[in-house]
Structure formats: structure tokens, C-alpha cells
Image (cartoon, rainbow, N blue to C red; front, side, top):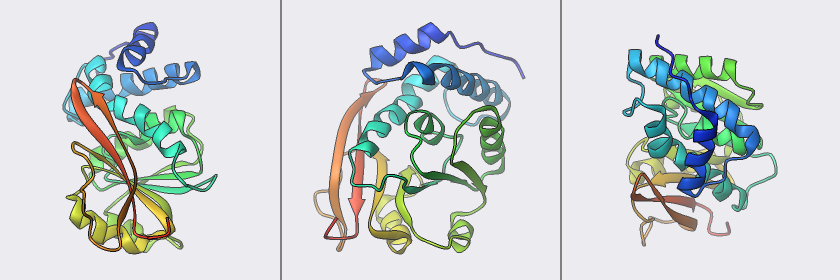
Length: 217
């Protein structure tokens, strides 16, 4: 597979231009991830954009907004987080470079993407980060305790997602959705919106929702 080299200085500038915080220590591993993703993408079509700059602007920027958003949420110091439909590691891999808290499981049923994720984790130092290759239902069956946080990016329509994860969260646990619209003004009981944030990526408005099925959250 052909190698595309990521200009580290240009990557840092892109982050600044996008208005997101990219710690200096995260520049090198993020560049390695982007190089790996761009190379595999040419052979396997893992994500839509192919050039690393476009991948950053359209996909990675979400992760860099998600990290600070998670930090301000009422989560335990070392949360158990499940990323459902993790794809090629977006938002999970860049997120773990800036938010390494607790244990983070990326669940992906599509074999090519899961294999890519395993290869990416073998190249990067991401403590507490794991890949489960298989259906979400099979992943749930193997868990001995519920999650503190569940992350979803376009995994399924939000109404279906609420039903799927409601009994999989700890009391006061949070479902965090990456969305293209604000959180609904009215949510089915017992769900409530704990927090949300809007931002811009690739010239378009996007949102982060934090929802809880616990009225006391």
C-alpha cells in the first residue's frame, strides 16, 4: 500500500486553524494514525475522504471537540466507555490521544475496519483502549457490568439507540452522540439532555449531545 507522509507542522497548523486543541505530544501519534488510515483507505475504502488533510478536517476535528466535552461531563475519574460502531477509529483513536481516561472499547462488526483498528492500536500507545470485532449485541452479552459512558457516531437513528442502550448504562450513565443537529427538544421518558455543544467542522455545524436516562443525572 502506498505511503502518504503527514507533515507534522502542517497538522499542528490545521488544528489551530480549526480552533481545536491538539497537545504537542499528540501530534506525532495522530500523524502516524492518519498515515496508516490514508494508506489502508486506498485499498479498502474505510472512510470517504482519502487525503489526510481532508480526513482531519472532516472527521478528526470531531474527536478533538469531543475530548473537552467529555471532561466537563459528570463522569467518574476512570469511566468505562463503549464506542458503538467504531468504524475506522473515528472518533475513538484521536479521542484517546487527548482523553485517555478509564477503559475504552471500540465495537465494530465490519471485519476490514476491525482489522484496521487492531493494526492501529498495535502501532500506537493508547492505554486502556481495546477493539471488539463483532456485533454490538454479542459485545453486550460478554459484559459483566454496565457502562459509565456510551459513545455513538451515526451508529443508528437516535430513537432506536436510546432503546438499545438504556439498560446498558450505570445509574447516571451518559450516552454521548455526535450529530448533525441539536439535541431534540423533547426526548422520550426517562431520557433527558444533560449537556450539548455546537461547533463547526469542514464548514458545517455539528453537535455533541450528552443524554441520560436517569432524571437525577
